[in-house]
Length: 454
Ligand code: C2O
Ligand code: CU
Image 1 (cartoon, rainbow, N blue to C red):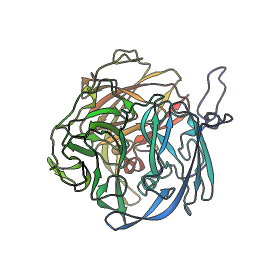
Image 2 (cartoon, rainbow, N blue to C red; image 1 turned 45 degrees about the vertical axis):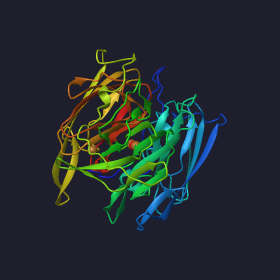
Image 3 (cartoon, protein in one colour; image 1 turned 180 degrees about the vertical axis):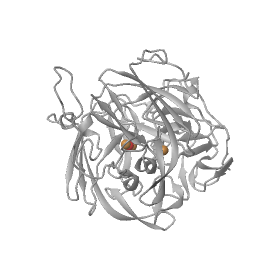
Image 4 (tube, protein in one colour; image 1 turned 120 degrees about the horizontal axis):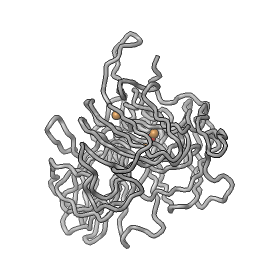
């Protein structure tokens, strides 16, 4: 019988991680961040059930961190020791917090039932880690995430480099795409800036450098167009792009969990960030979005560029520790399909990997030091943003074409319908890690497995 939920029960059962040196067995609980040093920054997140009023006037039953959505922005510098205390005040529901995009030590990873016990109602958990990965990331509950993230338990996590990568005077804005649900039906259109489902206007003085940190906190793919100015994609999944060039007339496609940072210099005329929706072959403009102009008025008709931005050919190459021609010590291949299974007296859609669903979906066992090549092939009818915890993967190829741009290090690989991606990672972070689709409904319906260090 399949367990179709996330790891809903507590109990850290994982002890599969072995340290090196004499075959000493290390349990997940030992793989913590620095516990005794004094933290550089402390944050408190309080999860609570609250009513949230959307800009449309509708109220939703939300679960929020510190009463807001997105939750408070956690902004730190690379290498700082961070301490986050999480209090759970949601009645009858346990939570956890995962740091999406940061390769933390295993016990800090926030996967309830795998790397820690879920935080019970009234309970508290303290996370400590030193992030190394600069850029735009996010945090979210990893307890029944397909429900809890939708209800609002997420927020941005920005890791700044030691020297700021922003030009002086930059307007640094977080745009998180999130769909709110009412009785399981999505309230359209999805909100930019968390709660806005109408066109939001912002005054922006011409000449101002603007950074938009686009975070897809939804499950489904989001498509954007930026009209009125050329722009640069300066980071993908937080990782800076080497020598980004100007982009215009292309849509940005961001899979669930993924992030794109774009920059432009505010021109004299208005600029509009618009979300696009695909209906079969047709591309439609979603109402709402963001409009920047000198005085907050005016408009610019949104583009509907058919051409999509390809991150695998963007920017200039740099040497990397390994690449397409490296000798891999492990290979792993996953073919995705949607299937209709009959059990419990009814047909249910299952998202399968190699014909199997969680908990039987194929896991990968590695040794510390392994160089692992993974191939994803998507034969299903939906995009699958594949997220490996605790590691970043380097993209080797997409649909048979080698990645030739700036080294593309991702934590979430959006394998679109019909696509084949090859990626690689170094097994350098011992523990028991989740590897799942970040369309969290798909994860809950089978697309979830583990990377296990032996
Ligand atoms: Cu962003 Cu396993 O999740
Ligand atoms: Cu999926």
